[in-house]
Length: 358
Image (cartoon, rainbow, N blue to C red):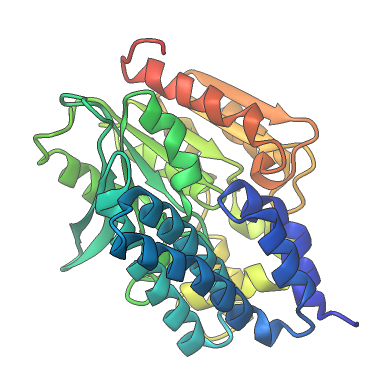
């Protein structure tokens, strides 16, 4: 069987990400090995997601709420990966996305601890997010978590859990160009603008300690979070995972699927426009030096998407205290070695936000 090179690219670049973020290895192998054409990617993943959705709905109907939440959360991740870079067919992509949103919404109240959907005012509309409080906590600190180019809040639970377990509330938000916001708000390099709206919203919430706010971002979010921290001084600490220093500098080395996803989510007509726009996502011109809060950066030495040197440069230029973890045998976001950094970054953030050691 001759397989579409776009499927080969997606499988090789993102396989460990799928598995470390909730996709069962056997499902990943079954779905990707069954495909010949990229055009069938979304349908195949939706078919497998439907298996887990059905199990979740059956469990809820039988009164097994926790099992239902587990199955439905997995289904949401599968539906997300059905659409994540499937931007050539927006109607099919959006239908899969709506299924991801619906499955996760069914799961939220039955998760342990439960989560609630929230809507954050932003430029006359709203940004959708999930707020989750650690069990038994009274006014815990809160970690704002932002996705990357092709991720969304429904994918972030595996990243979220170590922080939640250490006593932090988590607020996962789809920002401009991400998840639910991607259809109305294009990608923007000055991500401090939506982060300001997120922090403003947190300041109104009595159930969390708004004097202790952290920020976390993954992949392109690993640029967004440090960029926002350069301007938003209410943040106490920031974690960036494998973000670019200047997205335009990496443009020509990116996979075709990534460049096209960026074009669509930037609401641009051509690849030439997208390439020019990518340079607006930058920490150049002294922006990195404005990062004053404690900063923890993670990258993989074998990252084929964003060179590890971008992380090093970001850390070298930041003005505040910096910890850098370069995983020698790590790929993009070191998703092939998640045990190297997930617990460590959660411990670090807990310390920055004044929580006791666990």
